[in-house]
Length: 286
Image (cartoon, rainbow, N blue to C red; front, side, top):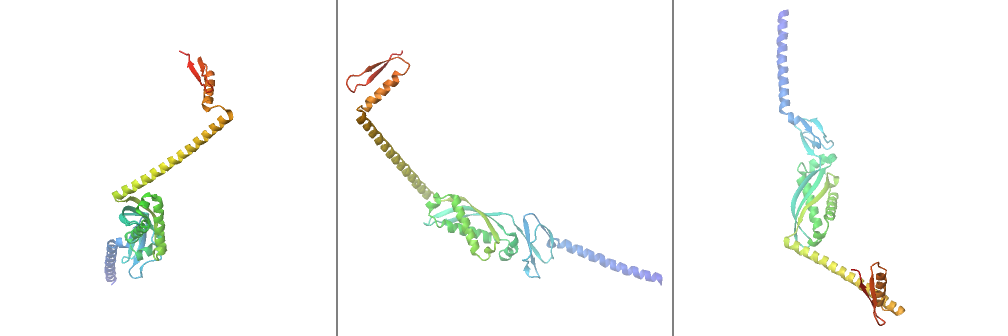
């Protein structure tokens, strides 16, 4: 009886052991098969948003940050880059006077990490094309459309970019969804701004003529000042001659004679005849 009982227990244990082994194998197979749906590695510069199949969809109250996270295999994890990103493109904008401007631009932006679940719910992973690009394009059209081609050509680039940046932030603050701060628009750059060749040459010629006119006006002002100086000098000479009774030409001759007489080299000074006679200096040095 005892031997029979031991055989029964052994057979029962073997049956349970087989079931345990089969269960472990099934579990291992399950883990291996759904490994990528259970464990998610979120690397540096990334953040994750969880979508729950049976508990309300997008989880809005939690952002999954760097590290390894485990979720239920029927849920999903969407991983976003939270670093500064860049988009760029080409655009044709009409100026205030209807001229087509060819623009090459680029914009930098990044998602707000704390608002990432809302960004995922309302816009999804393609938010750069669905939100960021249209905002930049709208701002460029609004700002550049307020100026004529000549004003754009003559304005500094930094001033234009400041206006575009302010317009972008204005658009964000006016929108209900964007006003939550889902995306931070960091910077926009104009890589190139081209006018039609003929128009560009015409504007450049006009600017050159304007500078030439300014230079001409400056010369006129300089000559006017020189005229006033000459008149003042002539009036001084006239007053000098009236007070002294000596002509300026004779006075200059006397001054020159004094300076030459004081020089160390030998010379002969011949005084001219008459009241206005001027000295003649003969150098005797050989």
